[in-house]
Image (cartoon, rainbow, N blue to C red; front, side, top):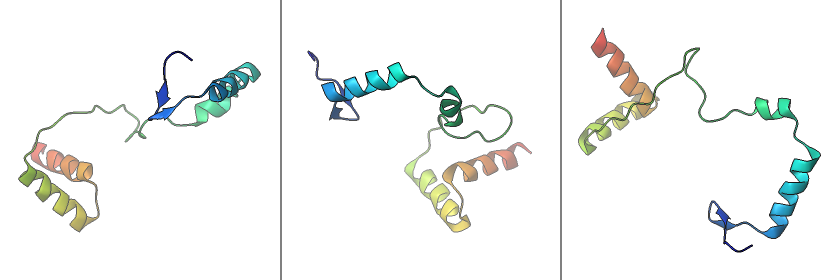
Length: 87
């Protein structure tokens, strides 16, 4: 292999490439591949949109403190605040 390819920092070996080749030649179980989820699970029936938001360290600390107190994630606290604000 001329180039030093890596996956997650680990070098890809000729043996690994040969194993992948054999695996591909044998074929894949399409139904099994479809069972595996990709990415994060959805939040409902409709697709959701990722929105970037800039917060100060003080704002993040307040959100994280509330999330820890209430046993929620940072995202849950932010979503609840947005819903309450929009109402």
